[in-house]
Every structure is written in structure tokens, then in C-alpha cells.
Image (cartoon, rainbow, N blue to C red; front, top):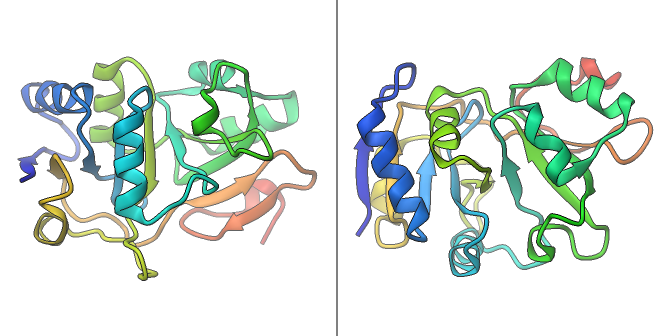
Length: 208
């Protein structure tokens, strides 16, 4: 049975953020708001939690998950980024974009794409998610909350609680989110390639 925290979307309550991080640290799966739609996330170093997260979403091991990071200072640990890529990322973060980049050797194999050795990275623009990342002190592994056999992401925390309360450990109610997934951009190719069109302009990447 999942817990349900109502957290202010602009001024997150420190007490609730700390409690949420304790749940994540113990292997919990959390539904959280982002600047696109709701996502589900877990600790990057907990294989059992990662497996559960994939089962909820109906994803196999070949389908990439994303790392949510606090800011660009964490990029170098997980991805190899050249000047061109860094300029594009800096111009569009924080924001509703997942960037596909070449993974460093620091990234556990289960988190990167098995054949391409790439990783998806995102700097979200949402106070609750950023507060969680700050308190946790490391990235979260996450994916857009789109249920198997559905095409639209969930953005109502009450509905998420009703449908997934036996599978999630925590639902964070931060209000409704835009009902659009993040835009996924592959920066390992030139010009950048859009893998999934979602929220956010493509103009910074020279795309339309």
C-alpha cells in the first residue's frame, strides 16, 4: 500500500522531502511530478527497485531509463560530453528534455543501453524533484509514467494512487502536471535526432 504525500509544488516541505528520500533509500518506488508529466523513480543502485520499476512500466532491459540529475555539474560522472553537446544542454536545462549521450564507465551496465552504451540524462525543472535530488545527493533513475498498453502519461496524483497503490511505495501529490512526456533528443549524432517528440521547443537543436 503506497503512502501519499501532498507537497507544495513551489515550496516543498523539508520534512516531507526527507521522508520521501528515506523511502527511496529503502528501495521504494515513488511517483513524482516533473515539468512534463508524472514519472516514477527509484534509487540508481538498487537492482530490485529497478526491476520493479521496469515491471510497472512494462519495459524490458533493452529499453532505456533516464537519470534525473540536479544540475550540469553531475553530467561528467555519467556521460561523455563534447563542447557542442554541452552548449545545447546548457541552453535547454533545466527543462523537459532527456538527452541521449555516450555513457561513461561509471554507469552501471544495467542502466545504459546494452548495445549502444548510451544513457539518457535529464535536468528537470520542478521544485519537488530538484529538492528530492538535493536531499538524496545523487541522481534518480526514472521513466515517464505511461502504463503498459496506454499512450498517454498519467498526470493526476489521485488517479495514480488509485491505480498503482499496491505497486508504488509513495505517490507525491504536487498538483497536476502537463499531460505531455519529455522530449527525447539523441545528441550522439549530428544533427541531433528526436527520438520522442514531447514537451519543449525543438528550435534550440535546429529542428522543427
